[in-house]
Amino acid sequence: MAYAMPVVTKEDNVWVIRIQKSNGKTQEYRCSTENQARQLALILARPEAETPAPRHL
Image (cartoon, rainbow, N blue to C red; front, top):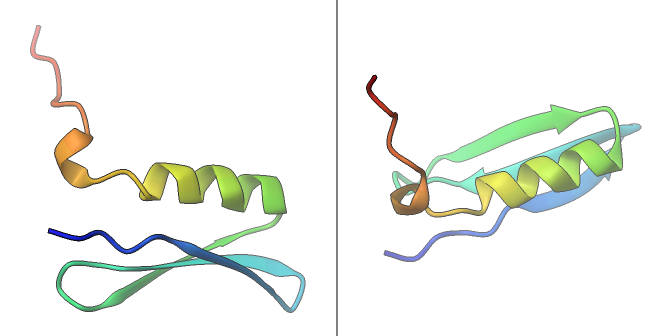
């Protein structure tokens, strides 16, 4: 399965991250700084299969 890379843009003094989900819908996140937006985009760019499973104690 191909994963869409997040797109980071600045709109009206707010940083917006958009990523297309596997169901075809676009998810949008808003951040107050470019650094926050870029860091979140890095996290969102990871395929879900690579997300670590929760640990059970």
